[in-house]
Length: 247
Image (cartoon, rainbow, N blue to C red; front, top):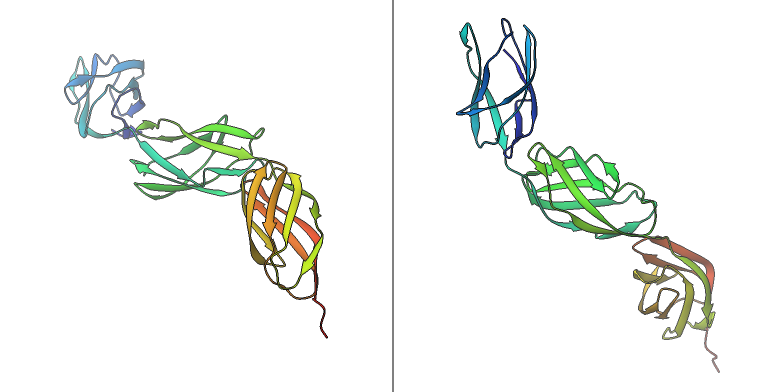
């Protein structure tokens, strides 16, 4: 007499189908000491709504002919999501997000707002998931669904991809130290600025402006790359290093 699924939320509510023989006219289905709600019954199957419970429950069926043998049903505690990282990502999606918590081993779906992704379970306390695309920039609720239920929401922010428009000044000394104003869009969540692949110190002024201090470099033009929570933007040959005079 198989039972499917053989596990569900400790809070009850799981739809369970029991198959076997001589099951018509069932008067009760017990999960341990508790009685399930019967929603369908044929001679070979019974569909019920599992009651709340904990641990492992013996499930049996009672008909006019007696009580069946027992099968095991495993109650799973509701999952808890504690944190996720990174907490931001591009509106286009595609970045990997790690979620830590408890009771995550049976996770089947992670919802980012109205969009859903299938996670990879790392352990009972961790899973990873590729974020789906967002409908627009802004914060959405993230929940994890497991056999034990759905977590309380965490917050994830979609960020539009940045663009770079101009640098002022566009050139400076090979010894570095030039203060450069970078203009563009989507710069508020900037995490890195590089000149020719070399990391520069920077300060974000607002969503359209940041100031970076050039590192030292070799004479010539280099790409300037700004990385944000929404991705990266490149200004090809955007800054030119100029050698100082010599006598």
